[in-house]
Length: 238
Image 1 (cartoon, rainbow, N blue to C red):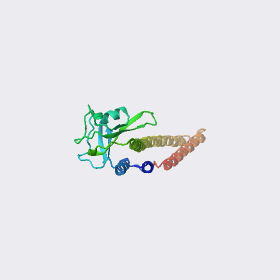
Image 2: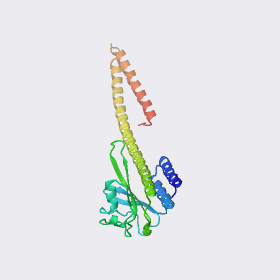
Image 3: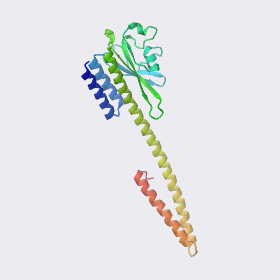
Image 4: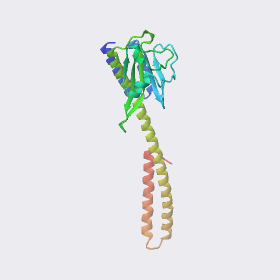
């Protein structure tokens, strides 16, 4: 794959990252394009609890892929735990490891996917990108391996963006719920105060407190008016 093609893919993936909120669709597009351009098979597995499961793939896989759980004793899991990309060019590099696919491939590139949480600054493991030549067993070139690591970073960014949007929406929902409850409680208190202020105004007629009682009523009316404006502004009419 030429340098121009690599840059085109990277720019295209970056463009998708900035324009889409559907990470699954973007990952499918990236893998399909990657598979077509490199002439390789590509697949992504993601962490689901304590398991690592294959969810996206492109290219000709001779065995079922969907939902396959990556074996905990596989070299793929080992790479994910270490957080280090590895390019397997010698079949002996997988000696001692267990394969996850029924048709095991020993020559492949393994790119762990992760991102740094902007709030905690902690590294979050997401999953892994795996690319191989299938039964042909052609090693991934060093140039393509470097390119795949960049694509892995972009896929990680796509997932990170989706997670941050999800967190933001959840936070907004919680804040909206708190605001609605607070507004409701505030209005209830104002209604009670307004009732008392009217009673006080009636009882104070003809006394020295009449003027102060009238002022209290005006203040309560101002509170009610301000709350109504606030409710309209926040679209939180109760």
